[in-house]
Length: 330
Image (tube, rainbow, N blue to C red; front, side, top):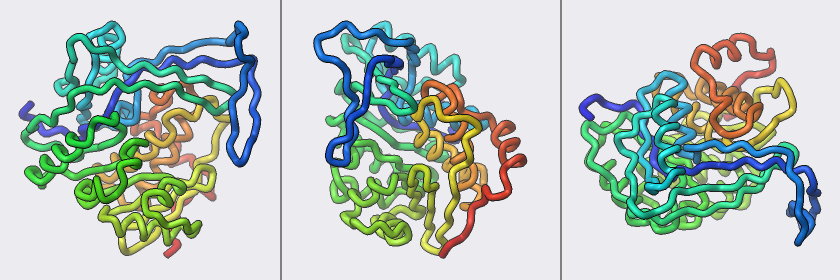
């Protein structure tokens, strides 16, 4: 591929089967909430919706494409029926698939999403593929790195090596569960290569070992690990960003109706923030773009159906409530 990509998302891809539960209840124990169902019974469910080709990185690739960028995905699938469906879904969605590697004799990731009210519990299984980083030339303008399986540590070092060889490529890093478990020291090279780094408040505390609840202190701790721009989301309390000079805050964009499904809200925020930077927007503008796409995504089932085009996003911006504004707070 000779033409430079704007956006290459790297990470695992799955099919999600969304099962809407009807007979369940919640129990709170020690600060955690358990999803409870009768054991040993046949339980009715309301509906099921199967969504192929999703996951942190595929969601980001689709988000970038909808917002007008030349977008591709570097990922792995099996040669089963689920893999074929995912590949077709990517192509139908306008995502370049030159770097989707099909592994003969292996299965494809398939998750079950148990929906109850607006929240969900996900039953996950990640196949351990043989990961390799192709030498894509020219390097894309941006790499967007997110969730990978537990056998992927050498792959992370290959990605860091690739970034060393391609200074024209910037990195956005939205770590998944395993990447956070690896810890800062193990992935130090990628933290230091990151142009922008995304996590939520609780993740920031774990990653930095700083249990402060002061968001500015946490932003400075995250940025101290190497990223040029630190972004911390805090659910209904909005999002903050820090580039070493200024701290900006933006509230959530108000929901037009109660959320249907929160799957993909973080992916849509992070990818949209990144796209705004790629398009030359300011930190303030990027911070205002992200929550709009998140608001739209949670109105639909699955992480991609609600993703906006740039025209739709700009319309929400033009019609925003008066109090929806990013503010410099430090």
